[in-house]
Length: 346
Image 1: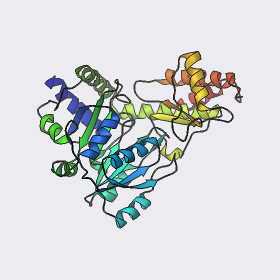
Image 2: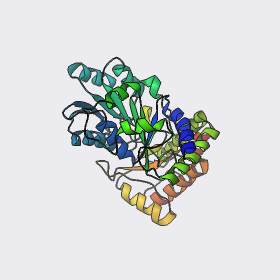
Image 3: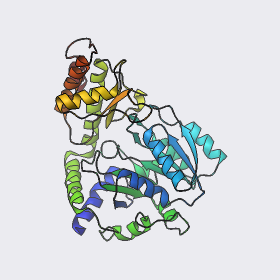
Image 4: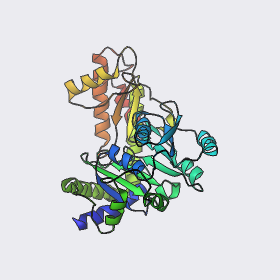
């Protein structure tokens, strides 16, 4: 197990874009989001939350639950935080951390972490990032961009079942984590995890079967090559987005910040996202997602992360067209979604 943990450490660091230690927790992504805050906050300290979707809201809720005073910059869903607004906030108050979502999978928008990191590089404020749905499918350069803690989970682009959480910790963050005046912590105490990571151990019992699966997934990623993995995700998501547009489902949000790991499409009235999701699952055994927030009924979401290929994208579009037609939505030409995707792929 120590051998496997040591190899995982070397294989996963390039996905974060860091030389810093990557800590392993038996946890979902939400658990390591909480860990990132519990280890750097003292109750009453201020946090600046950048919210442009469901998971930015969740990050802010966790900070409030831990006793932080939370200021929020809320961007229109589908758009990303404005660095000038962040800079203005930083001039007016002292924050322990800025918390951000890298890939907001509820809207399909990707945050410019490098711009935010540049604002914090010469400040005591830490940059904490949720990349649960981004890491492994999109480039991260933690050390270069100035992110201090990046957290992720095993069940997205890392291609494993849920149950593993990971957090990379910069030296700047480590100095805060080591202080004794932070929030109460035990199981999620990063000091314990940091003390064991170089020994190729975890602080508490780890899910061995999941770690063996992760080890294999990471080897697959490196065998394909990181740049090739990122290019494949971008190519397939662009093709799926083009196919959805061809079917009359415009892409949701700002196209300049579109995700490589999830495609979010706007549902034409009078249809709802829920009925499309239900029809595809019941008739074609194909699982896509709607929304469980203020976008409920307005969008559908299709993941393009992990070990997927062109055939998966074209099959999804074929079944999506059949579902739309069955539900009363007229497409311009039969097969137009698949044709648009094929054109994008070429």
